[in-house]
Length: 288
Image (cartoon, rainbow, N blue to C red; front, side, top):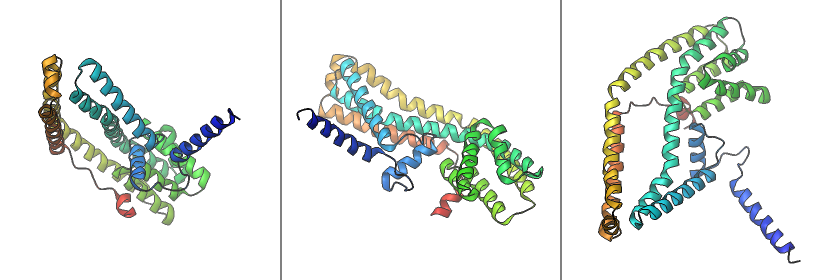
């Protein structure tokens, strides 16, 4: 009897944890958890659950805070280290999302041109999608492969394309999805020519973006140097016992909090000034 009670208690804890963390099939998670899951899917981490992401952020923040406390010995520095460690996964996935979108933006013209060639050669639309999944650009092969597998299971090509657009969350993908869905439903002999025109337009847009980003690269470098310099000075000052004691006072903690807010605001402002505007998403407007 004494062994049965802990076993039942452990089973109950496991069932509660599994019920809170298990994805709900066929139902979109509402609220903040749903938006976080959609954001993770757009970052290429759709297999990561929101609760796992939040838990990893908390653990990483506590770990960095413990290391800062052991090295510096300042509670105020430990608080800032906790905030920095907890936000690092979000910063990492945001950079990963930006890099993934850049790779896909460069790969879309070749993929669309290959799709147009397959359509003009007489292939059906599902067969043309399979061709891109096998021989298309590497960043987009998993995307089209998922569409092919989804179509084989569900038999609904339009639905599979819509789900691809929702997963990729890219304006170019939205235009391709709308074009392919319209051609699949109503037909059309000009699909190949339309896709080639879209590919040429995307190549011109990509060339213009590369030129502008090359000219604005100094803005990004200046923003990163300006944001990192004060905190390097903070580490040097806090490495001495007198500096660590000063940052543990209410005035020192206030200085660090205000400095953090000013650094984040300035960095975000400089990055926003140097960032090119993103095109509006077609599927997002349709869904809204």
